[in-house]
Length: 159
Figure 1: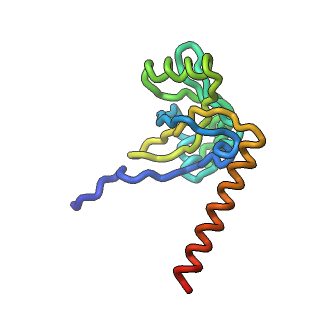
Figure 2 (figure 1 turned 45 degrees about the horizontal axis):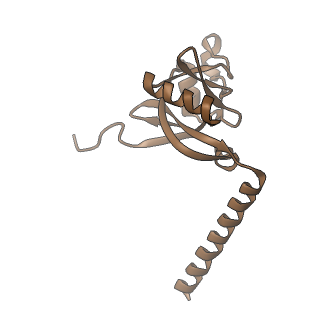
Figure 3 (figure 1 turned 90 degrees about the vertical axis):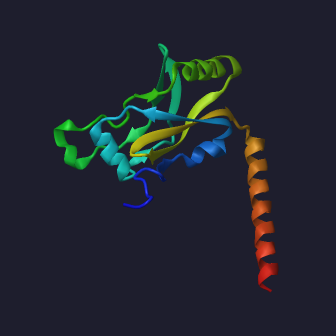
């Protein structure tokens, strides 16, 4: 049958591009997410938006808020609510640790991407701090200078 396993690769479904611009990511955590069938089908078509999404601890459980997963057209009456709150699946100690970081140290939990891993939808959460305006400008300057250096190096290699 070969050495290929069904779920070895990771397929990114949705990426939160704005998160790395708005926040500096201190740590990343992988979490499972509790979804309905129509949500999984919709996610496989990348019909989702993470721009305003955030996670928080309530009653000892981790919840993902404001993640928009568009309705799946073929699900008709069995469809889901697009912006419902979804439970994240983490170990109790992880939830307690993240909850303390958010409460005491002023961090924010932001989903960075949704992806398929071994046939299951996972969320990569970032433990983040908000960037100030001057930090964003500094990051943009650094990115631009890195791009210019790379372009110059490529020109020198070619000619």
